[in-house]
Image 1 (cartoon, rainbow, N blue to C red):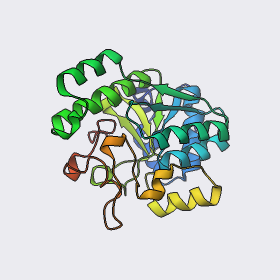
Image 2: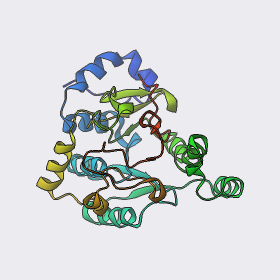
Image 3: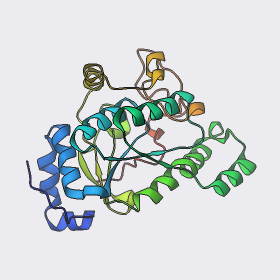
Image 4: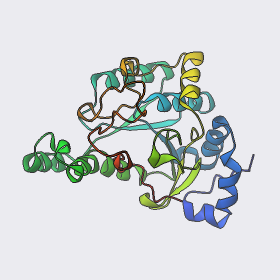
Length: 251
């Protein structure tokens, strides 16, 4: 495994020290090694972004074994399912970790609802993206301004929009911050085997046919023959199904 450097704080510095080599070296590493590298390199300037899906609770469990005071943040859009809030409390208690909760700007929400209605996302892609941007993207970007790197639960198998992700990337859509995807190569089976074997708490909606869970009005259960993200924004084409948190223009 490659060496670490606690002074590396952003993508530009990493590039100067040979980022392509770092990227290639980490691409075949186990998730534990990737996370260990992240914590040793960025110390308290790296955090797990968690929506408390199956991948995210796996990341939290692995990370808590390596760094008990790992930073975890979540985006509370104001439209999350009750089951997600239940899980957040359960995770906090089990791992004795603080969850940094990021909220959208109240005035931005008020204006959007007044102009477009509560359920504007059903009207079209533009309206849905507006809602996602205000409730999720803007709070995320504010939080990322505090960090040198963020950890996500993205997997290549999840969707057509994610097949090319690397375990370590430069997030060009978020000012060159380093984005770390330790589970990029994991399969759905890998995720659930880990959860069961390690008795990791997970969202009870997964047992009701919800493989991917977001805001309540934008998430439905799926049939066995459907893609794992088929229940997210199900009225849109698969190639459009991203909220803006994970753009495709990353290297």
